[in-house]
Length: 211
Image: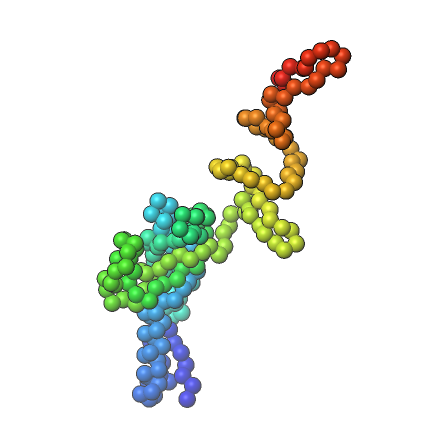
């Protein structure tokens, strides 16, 4: 017999036999208590704690098929792409829609201590034990872009200044379509732009330094 599924209340088909009733009960408990992952909207952000407050985007449905919004899930940890002391720091922003995955055990103690710990409760696959995995969509227009494609190479695009706080080494030609502005000296080989001089062909001596 085909069982007509319903949202919450047992159907007449499910009541026709013990097997149907058991099948309905198991399905209902899975839908009710087991959360795997959901698209969620960021409605709160704490970059110092690396947590977001999110609201699931897939609504709940009442037994009479009326949609009902989920409540807010608070203090969901998010991660940065990192390995040891190397970090790619791109945190989520307000309004982003991202994927939140839910752990199979209570993670509250691990969240608070950042150390291995036993679960504080016996809950499993709970909305309280989520991780913000990544941003899927954003209404913001992309401005700061790092793109890498097989045909286009690597490109960095931004309307603002790109700051590099490091000693840099370029192995290859460097092309500049704008001005080159340096607060210090510029050298080509051993020749200084600030201190180099030129021989004077019409009189003894050399020219003065560039001004």
